[in-house]
Amino acid sequence: MPGKPMPLCPGVRRIVAPNAGMMTGPGTNTYLLGVQEIAVLDPGPDDTHHLQAIMTAAADGVIRWVVVTHTHRDHSPLAAALAKRTGARLIGLSAPNDGRQDETFRPEHVPRDGERLQLGESVLTAIHTPGHASNCVCYFLESERLLFTGDHVLEGVSPVILPPDGDMSAYLDSLDKLGAYDFERIAPGHGGIMEHGKRILSLLRAHRLAREDKVLEKLARGAATLEGLTAAVYDDVSPERHGWAALTLEAHLIKLARDGRVTQSGGNWRIAGI
View 1: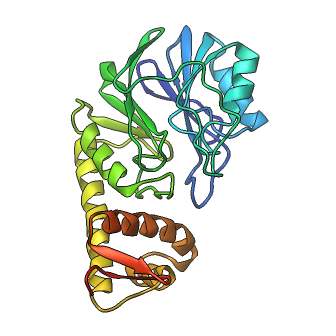
View 2 (view 1 turned 90 degrees about the vertical axis):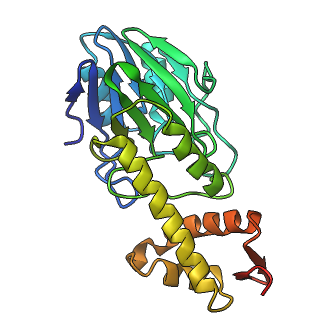
View 3 (view 1 turned 60 degrees about the vertical axis):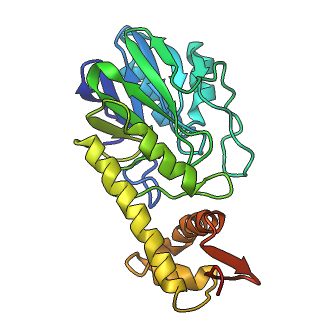
């Protein structure tokens, strides 16, 4: 339920923002880490009800840090208001300039890849995972073997890759990078906690490569536009989602072009050399 804190493990609570929708599922997950000194991870959209829910849940402690996984507008816009109200320090990567970002986010600390952040009772390892967006960061809570993934890994769906800032090659590399960490469960930006996190990563990677194979299979039958390819490659997806699917498909095509496997001219994509 939106606004209701849910304990997930010692020192970690989740509050779902009231922004449910096709691309946000049940809503953006905001995580509160710590009891006396609190870090708020992904404060969510700029919504007064959600702000009040966070403040109420944190009433027995002090919010000292606001951490964001990335700056899409369903994850970070509340950071400024929360920091203004609490004096919390903003942590995350600055917004890229692609027209899809929350440009109000101004981090006071930009975490290095692999940096261990001591946030009160919690220690988070920042892991730079570009792909969904270039400034995506996952955070590993080693004490609970829990990985906070933002939109890099989601429950039940694969994330949209949003070119030109989003990058399919980087996304697959980031999945491999996460595999080096000793986590068991995944706390995503939308949806519920996922058990068997390493298997989830493996399945997600296999899904993306299977979709890529389907692109090549369709192009082997002849050149096609992005629109035509979307309908063919995502024939297992509701047409109302094809607008978003086309973005991820474009990311696949850009990757395949870099790999020398496809080419594009005059609005048509084809197998390289044909």
